[in-house]
Length: 266
Image 1 (cartoon, rainbow, N blue to C red):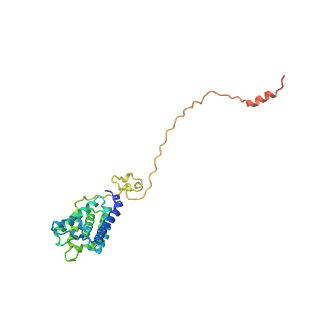
Image 2 (cartoon, rainbow, N blue to C red):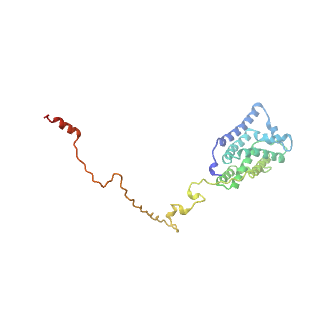
Image 3 (cartoon, one colour):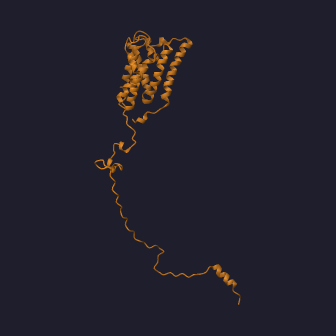
């Protein structure tokens, strides 16, 4: 896979913005019409709580909760759709399902809501997948994610903050790491710009490298040998002849006519 496969598309901006706007639309429905979607969250180890595996990422308790999740989602989804465009949709979908299912298994007996589990999926996948590929751009992306969101790792431990779902955070972190093994490690290669980058490059045939000797000293190229062209035999053209040709001078015909007319009749 060549590095120029990292291309900016409409999905890089469109998908993150649409996803976050949809979260705000759901929250607006709650406060506008007095709905309470908390009951549609994940309630661990109950049949009715399984619906939260799908719905919980779109439900938030208050505007501060929604705001804190919105900015990381925009940044991480944009990075995902730019650097992992082919796998992006499947990572989002399976990340929601896997993290939600794991939260349903290990969570406390309370409703778990919010898109933070998806955020942890994205952070985990981007970080670990970049290290696995060992490609400098993706490794740099991994380090950038850690610099921006590395502090989030503390919220995967219990009793750090009883008001948050550490189970959902931990489930997202584990799910993102597991998803890195479901996708083949991409082999990246640089775009060939110079002849010396080609695998079949031969320095002996390079005009520039021929200007250096074995010790790396600059030398002048030997003067090219000039091949003498064979002499061509002269071929007599068709208008050549050995016969002598004599030419008579004749005055202009009009001058002769004038002379004849000027003579008196006898």
